[in-house]
Length: 302
Image (cartoon, rainbow, N blue to C red; front, side, top):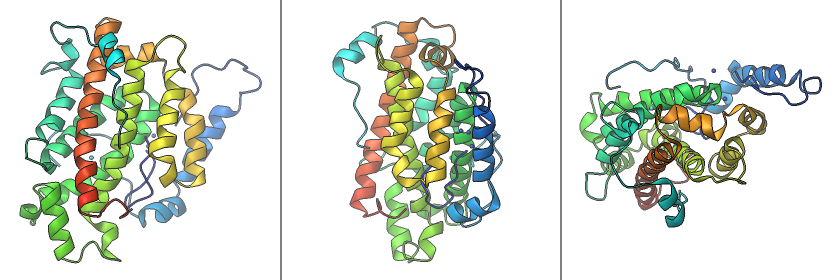
C-alpha cells in the first residue's frame, strides 16, 4: 500500500523487500527479486525521501501498543449474498479476532453525527496495520509508511492542541483559521496527513473487497489489488514507485492464502464474509471522510 506523494508520503513493502515466491520461468526471472529489492532500496534513499517527504525521517515499522497511522466500490448485493452467510460471526470478527479489533474503532469513529472522530479513526488504522503485517512483505512495506502518518497525526490528536483535533471537522476548521492550510505550512498540517491516509484507505478497501468477492475465473488477488492501486494511489505516485508497485504485486499471496491469514481457522465462506464486512466498514469510513474533506475543500491539499 503506497501512500500518495503528500506530506510524509513514502512507500513502506520493508514500506512493498519483495521476494517473488513462485517463479514459473526460473531462468528468465532469476534477477527479478534483486531488481525489485534494488528499486525499493533506491526509493528509500535520502534523495527520494526528501523529494516525497520533505526529508522527514521514516518511522520505525514496528507498531507498539497504546495510543499514539473513494467513492469506493460497493460490494454488489449478489456477491455479498455469496460471501455473507447468516449465523454467528466468524471468530476473526470477535473481540479477540484480528478483523474485529480493526473494525470496531473504525466503526466507532463514525459515532459523531456527520463527522469522524480522529482518535478512533487512528486507533482503527493501528489495528489495520497489525492486520496487514502478516499478509506479506508488500503489506509490511505499506504499513511502515502508514505508521509514520498515523504517528504524526496522533502527536496532534494527543498533543497540547488536542482540543482542536477531536474530529475531522474541528481540525479542518481550526487549521484554516490558524493559516495552517496555506503554503508553506500546509505541508505539515494534520488535514494533509489525513488526506494521504484517506487515499490509502481507499486502496485497502478496494483490495480487500475484491479479495472477498472474487470468484472462479476472476483475476488473482495480486492483479485485483494492483488494479485497486492504479485506481486509488498510482495517480499520486512518481514513476519509480509505480514501477516498483507493478513488480511488487506479483508477490501478493493467493486469494486462498489471504483469506486464511485474514481469518485463521475459518471456512472459506466465513473468511469471505468476514473480509467483506471489514471492507464494508472501511468503505463507510471512507465515504464519510470523503464527504467531509470535499466540504472543507481539502481534496486537493496533497
